[in-house]
Length: 182
Image (cartoon, rainbow, N blue to C red; front, top):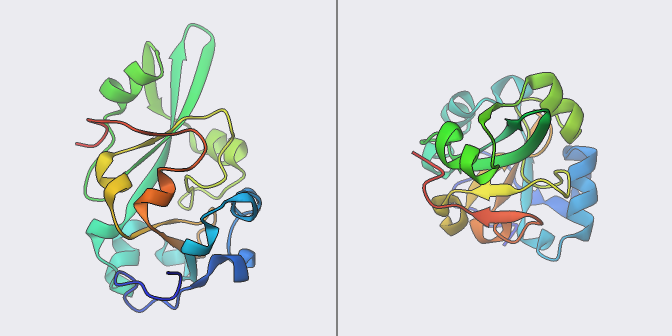
């Protein structure tokens, strides 16, 4: 699968296990242990074009096949719980409703950039659901889990992963959460 991607546009995907140099350290570690890693591809991109709209416009990859991974911090008293939320780029995560309730938090918000980068070992703007801390839930919108092909971050701004949604649904801590995206 890693060689044929209808959503690749002008990207040059390569099997991710052949190009672990293109992903963040925690992502490479997770990929080495992942049973379905041979179903993923990676492509180098211009880091200045890593943001979704610019990436899709430049590389011709459809916006509807791009998924964003955002880190959310839920707080109850002094306790902070983190989660990753993966939604299609054409939608937004319901952080203050669905995610807050799932984390059993009084307040939930996007994690501060410095915290997200430090806790994931990934670059801001390239955070991916692959290789996140093992105790974090990875909350997936149903549309993400059902997508035949997606473009997601690679942990760095200089590349993108191409992955079937069903592979994301098998990640450690992954949960398909109805109502996550709106």
